[in-house]
Amino acid sequence: MSRQVIRSWKRSMRIGAGAEFESAEAAIARDCALALLQRSISFGHGRLAVLRLVSAVRSGAAVPPVCWDYCRTAVSTSRDLELQSLYAEAAERAAAMPSLVVERRGAEHPQSTKDMTS
Image 1 (tube, rainbow, N blue to C red):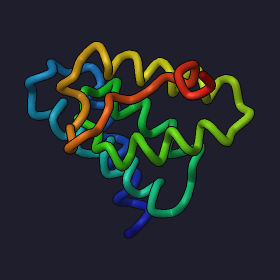
Image 2: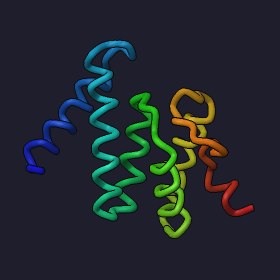
Image 3: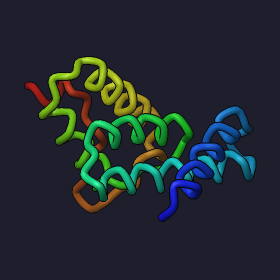
Image 4: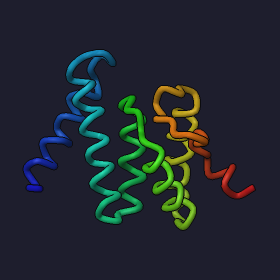
């Protein structure tokens, strides 16, 4: 995948960020956010994946459970308090809007980092 494609996805996310939720631009932004998240996970970029997860949730994308699992693990092994805070923010936002989480059988909603330490 070329760097140009990645830049195009990022550009589409920026354009869609200010668009109405039901607009085509917003839908494209959600798809691009998920594609960037999946790419970060596939390359093993934990910190970047968490940042991409936050962007995906903010865009209104329905994030698959496997992405939440990966990012939860990345956050639990990180000492970066800002990263943990961003993950917790995304988890709280997703929990408040259940449509943002793609359910799987027996899956729970995303946890905040506070829940992980208890």
